[in-house]
Every structure is written in C-alpha cells, then in structure tokens.
Length: 159
Image (cartoon, rainbow, N blue to C red; front, top):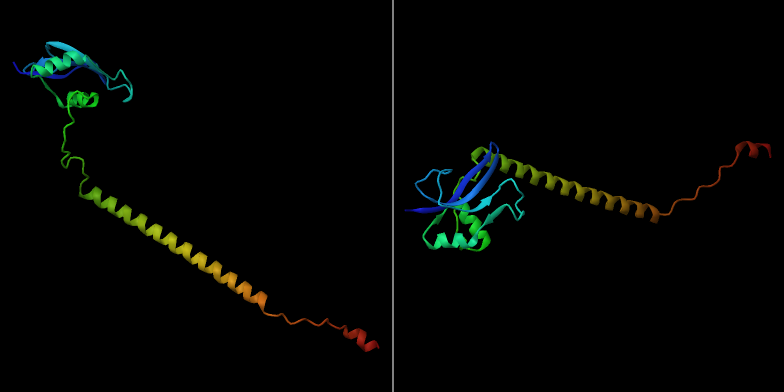
C-alpha cells in the first residue's frame, strides 16, 4: 500500500480548511484516510501559529514507514525543519509574455529618459544661476559714473 501524507479539504465554499492526513494514494482527496496528522487553515495570517498544526511524532512515524509527502506538505515540513529543503525549478511559468516584457522595457526607457531630462534641466539651472552670479559680481565691480545733480535751469536764468 503506497501511503501519502496529503491535504484533505474541508470547510464550506470559499472558506477552505484542510486536514493533514496519512492516506492510501489510491483513495480520493477527501475520501478515506488512515490517520489525521494535523490541520492547515490558509485563511489565517502567514505568521499565525495555528495556521499549520501537525503531530510531529506521527508525521515522523509515517515518513519512516515510507509515506511520501505532497509538495505542499513537504513545504510545511521544510519550514519546521523535519526534512531538508529541496531545490525547485520555477520554469518559465512565472515569466511575462512578449507583449508584457515589451511594455516593461518601454516603461523603463521612459523612466530613464525622464531622469536624464531632469538631470539636464537641473544642470542647466545651476549653470544659469552661476552665470547670473558672475554677471552680478561683474556689475558690482565696475565703477558707476557719478551722476551730477541736475541744475534747475529756471534758477540759473533768474540769477
């Protein structure tokens, strides 16, 4: 009899709750099982202690008898340190398609162009400020011809 440690679904529609069970691999997912080993509630937060509960003694017993854990159960066991972490290949399923990658590249090019334009504008503003400062310093350095007071012509004629 080929044994598996797997999840058996319970709970209502859109409210999943799973039992971790040791079952014959030929039995249906929610069918007959040999022993209940724990529970898994995916609706709880990932850092919640009661999200996954397992009777580790019984899990180790079934693993020693040759029971094969499913992928999800093996991840739980890896997290608890019972079995060694496996290297998993995430083939190309997670990679975006041609159009999506083209959109990402186009967006990245726009961002790069915008940052380059912003740095060029900032540099031009700094240069303009420096030129204005130099012009102001030159204007202050050149002597200004003193203006002679305007003489009232009418006062001169009367004298």
